[in-house]
Image (cartoon, rainbow, N blue to C red; front, side):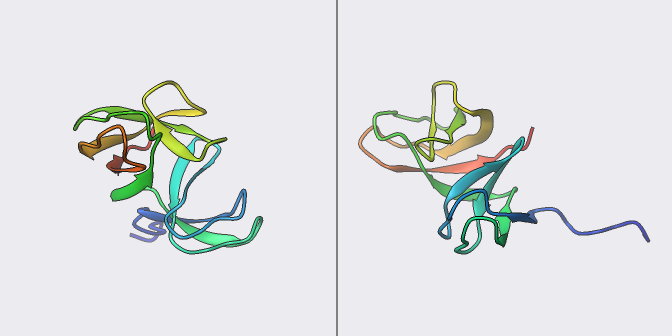
Length: 108
C-alpha cells in the first residue's frame, strides 16, 4: 500500500520535558512511554501501544481491569481523574505501597 507510513506502536515526538527511558508523558491527547532518554524539545520515540510498567500513585491499590489516568504534575498513573484520563488498563494488580503498575496502553 503506497500510503502506509509505519505500524504506529512507537511514534517520534519532541520531548515536552526532560525524560528518562520508561517515563510516561503526554503530548496533546496522546499518552506515551519514553523509549530512551531525551532533553526537553529533542526528538525521541514514545511507545503508544503495548504493556509497560509505569509509575503510579503509591497510595492507590489497582486491580486488573482498572482504567487509570495520568497525573502530568506528579508524572504517575492514578485512579482519580487526572490530566489525561483512561490512558491505560491495569493488567497486573498493584498493592497500595508499590510505586509502579503493569498496564496496557489505551489510546483514546
